Image (cartoon, rainbow, N blue to C red):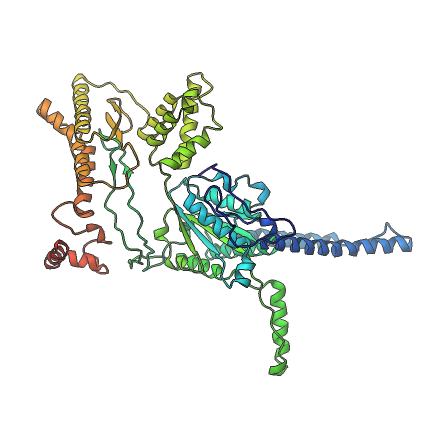
Length: 601
């Protein structure tokens, strides 16, 4: 997600006005054209506010300048101010009590301040051109950014409601914060970054005050600069579902790599997960009053982007008082609050646990999922990172780079960058100034399976472990010849005394029943080899049995690969939870039989 082709921007002359009308032809990289911020509604509002501040500064400086000119005119320029004499016995007690009040109130007052950090556009070096590997997300982001830049045209001329909230969901390290910063830099508006955990406070009610302060600052900056982008990192820390609701939207099945499975490694597994069809699931969650109050405050603030300014509140109060004595046909109109151009972005890797009220239109209008990069995306990331990292000529070969892309299945962009950094460390350890393919492979093995820790095995243990691992290797070669065998060792790594590391040759999103059975056979082959050659089994296959059991349970209870088609993943909260109709039906023998009959038909 870092660094791809150039983003096509629509060229607009200074005298022209940016428009939402699409350009005649598609962009070279297939992405929509990005409106130039300087000539869009955001840029015009920023220029208007800049001129207003210049006029205010002229008035502010003009008053003391006129006063000094008057002193010069009367011939006494140096005696500008004269201070009265104060009795120290009166001043010192007053200063003491003032200092005491500051000390006592500082903690409480400071607890309600906004904890954000504001970045100016010129402080952010990331641009949309630096974001690669997520073209579908990037395309939607560019369209949302165009609505943000031309919000007045979209609202006034087209009658639409611009997007106010975007929810970025995805695994850690997939580029959510990176993309949000790039959006702020391209829009040319301030970026107000805040971590959701920084809102939390030990004082009751201080968390809600911090949230109010943050949104107040966001509105103020947006009015001053023509727009502002707010970003809340890990919003699930303050926006978990309140009691009784859970925003469960069906995620895709995730295939995880099984680490720490005894003497077997790198078998893809996915545990039985409960999936729904995108509806809200009713759970008996218990939340405290404080947590519910924080979520309520967040919901209120997301509906209050267009609050009246302080001046308008005073004007409204005065007008209301005057209207009390005026006839109905002579009532003075109340000022209309200005439309504040704000785009709020939140990031989380637990979107299903957020409060459902946050995900409705009008709050977070768009949910964008950041997936792990596919092989093509990983290859683009590898090409980008190797532009700036010293490497040997062998890593310039397309075959080698494709090999690295295939071996890094399931890696996030941050993990790929870290892999090359560790490879450079290996090169320094060898006394070299550039990494080789061997350095990359060693770094990958350490990251995935841990650092080798040679231990002194007894002769019997060495033979036993070698036979065990050989059984895995033979079964993998015979039962799953399409898999990539990577490492076979009896050197202890983490909790594994030995291991067979193997993986998919390409990205795999589904598996057949034959492939699932092959994974079970590979897992059980180590124990079979022990029993065949030694007539006994050891404790080594414990991790293998754990993995094989997980795969078998998924086949039975999740994907219907046996004689039953009932999905145990449908049971959200256990078979005896009274609020779950699926659990209640499946816990009844007659109900279970009827469900099985319907599915078999």
